[in-house]
Image (cartoon, rainbow, N blue to C red; front, side, top):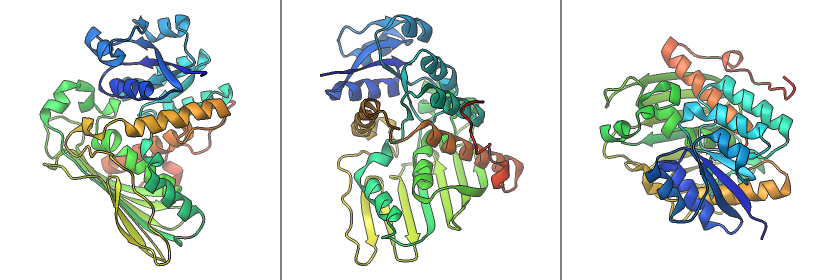
Length: 349
């Protein structure tokens, strides 16, 4: 077996999830760790002898690795991901790709120049119900898209924010839209395509920190369809994430990992995912199945020299849309397509 040797940058809660997912597959092996406390490193190694390094630079210079996974706080993704690309390593970045759209664009350009496999974690794309709906939409079997709605009615305690101070900081994407809602926002873009304009509102309703904990936004898609996204960590006790889509032929509703309503006459209901936990009140409740699927796809993408299921370009699209929603909320106006972060990215810039 030709294992893909992985270096983990930034052990912690999500780093531990990645370490467990990497160990669960035959084709991947955790071969190095950069940064972290002894306790965090121990949680990631599971008692196995894994080389550790104080810095990303030291790991990239000395470790025998083929790829890295970036699990640092969101605002620190750019520099370490760029360093890994320059060192010739494939890169998987935990969501979001970057908080700053300009930094995300920089990584897209670097990835294109390198011809390495570079992806961002968006594991919800790989769930069977979403895969099936995407295929049916693309084939025209569900009709013309008209409306898509998603809601993240979650709850996070003050202790959750105190545990990791970056979660309270806008520069690290600590708000509910960037940190909790970006997965479903990515699904909206993946299913319905390019957004022409956004109108957003945000507030801090249940916590004392400055970063928003509740956001609502209206999206106007290039196709003419509309979208609504609501995200919050201030709504106890928390409910499973919801996604609804409507076309000229019918509609469906998904509750977290299950299709709870299917109203497309003549089209069989797709299978749902099995065992995907809801992070409505506990971020650790989602388990590792989604990350296992992400790593399986990423390892195959490296072998097949193809783009992964969620590329840096996909991560950039989500980052620039979140930025536009926040700008709209801050400035109290709609943000049009030509005001959203630059759409065209040239690899030779």
